[in-house]
Image (tube, rainbow, N blue to C red; front, side):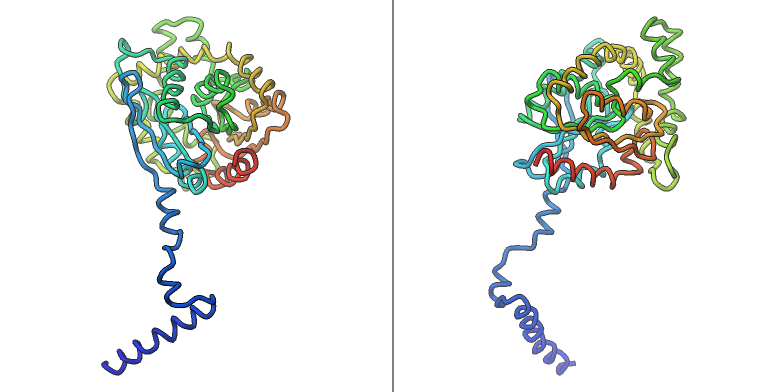
Length: 332
């Protein structure tokens, strides 16, 4: 054993010398070199979790990536939270500063009572706008999905100088995108805010409907979509008072279609670089809502994906690759 130990000790310098000679470095140069970047890359892409107070409301957000890199602001949809970006964030954070907040009433942000806070898309957009100012974002690319679109487009049309690019994933800005049966009871509610009409939209807040959003139109939801997604979203929906908040936001969604012409004018006038990655089998915002963007943004890059509403669950790797290519060309 002693001889084996001696041989090993003798062989270590020989092996080290062979490696060193291959790279034309001395052992001292190797020892003096800074750590290989894998650790720093891991540190850069690691997600951190924060809260800030906006007008007394705690807003939770996820953050990753170097702060001196271009920023990408991820705006989530209904009924989820920034959790929907849990896998995308590390994929972007190797070269981008990524921020993903939860709106009030969603995820880990505060859920103020309805008599203390106005649950409307105008107000949610105002909170997100103040949030970006408070954490020091002066320019950023937007990723908008579902509810993130009417929130993000309010920001973009109000502050076009802050928007470096837009990534749209099943986020609507055209009447064609809401011309389908899912919206019939919601549109009736917009016309008549009665308890009877509210009762017709409340089933969307139950577990079967939440699970449906993560399984309808996907290639293989059993293997590709974690059941944690709909269970977590439902746990947030089942908090006391949250379903009333969601019903109020269903009603407020009726303020969005009248703003479509304004948002389309923003597209035409400012021509923001746009990447459209759309789950074409979505029954809420189907593929018919994706193609109209090309009327106002003929240079937009459109990819209709064979998946459903939350396309990141099934095609997250593809979307990340498309975003890297797009953002590297248009932003970085």
